[in-house]
Length: 580
Image (cartoon, rainbow, N blue to C red):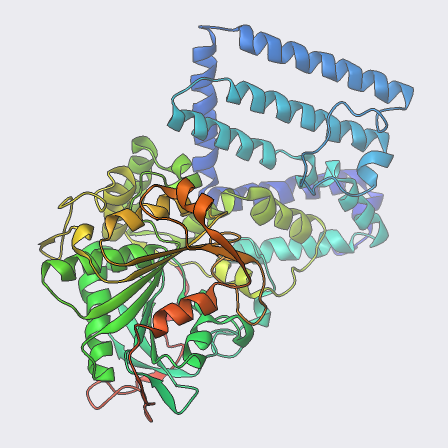
């Protein structure tokens, strides 16, 4: 390795390098949940093979077609027309084989087409398995994961772009790739961005404010008003505890927090603790009682108000919904309105995450989590990245390790890599009671903080923002919340997905959203009757909130108050703790 060109002059040394590199990638894959992926794929296909004996005709037909296509590929290859008459082509949007080398070199053209033929064979056999809905989705998902992992683009010796770059750089790209790989092995995750370009409080989470309260669950941030007046009723933001809060406060041009401040909202935000294995006993009740309910109490105390407006995202919204149901049972009216951003309150349709959710998989992960004390943030991130594995896993393996490139700075991907843990107690409750049993949507289905919860008793105004391409909280699933709550409901459907659809700054005026659909007759009817609006949904929401924010009053000169004094500048210590 000291002689950067030696690998190219010594083929065996080059092969040994590639083998070692591949093994290290597999070790990282295993450490971030890859073992579970491969075991699930193996089990699914073992079950499918066993069932195939009942009707082997599907397998026979698929294999016959595959063999015929392979023969045609060989004929085209020998006649020199493989590129002009492909027997298999990448799907639309598949960017893995765009380089000219994949079609101009007959060897790599054959490797590409043969891989695509095999992929089609596996997918066809999986799609014709005729399993029940849940098993069918799992089989197709894990089959696709296996197919993506085995792509020739992921291995140096079968990727002409990698070989060409190695030749041009005299091995420099491979040396740099190894350095990148060793660095990522130390971190235990794949780098998706240049992490050295970001420091919290300097480049991200920059909105000026202070921590004014903290306990074992969260820090409460109070942001400095940007004008001389604020609306009388404060705004409390409850982000997901499954991620860091600063997705809502990235940089000034795309910060939702700064937008709230600039709109005259007296803005507060919960920064959740990143739990350690020693805190495994923290429960869902703790997140509600010592988390959301405590934050509501402190914010109203600081603002001198009896009501506030609450905003929550994803699992933060599920926590807020649980809290509102507890408050309704106690006849507590401390929240005037609630905004739910891409939030499931009914989990009958969990979207693409359903492939991870059945009793067997949940039990296996539950045992692991209880043993470790936490659901490790790396495993959680891997699960989400698997939903778009070619974009969020394998493209970085190729670019970082095989081509030796350093990914460019990107704020959202930095946040995406800054994962958090979940305590074992809280996680097992969440996955079982919400996803498996769907108890939050059931009247008196859960007891939280000593209260039977019924979302039907929540009668405050509610604003739902969902996104049409969301694969984590599918919009038709979130729409069910409009039928669970009994207050005045505003439902808005944004373009794009779970993150990009929410972080859609008004200043850029991009994308679009739908409003004014007719409620009460299901999601499809709502969309059929809705009106399409250009631009960001942020101004629409801001106007909705202003009507519930009270009159304008003098902005606070200091943050916090005599009882809840400033502890440290925002973004605080809790958000800077990395997962263990």
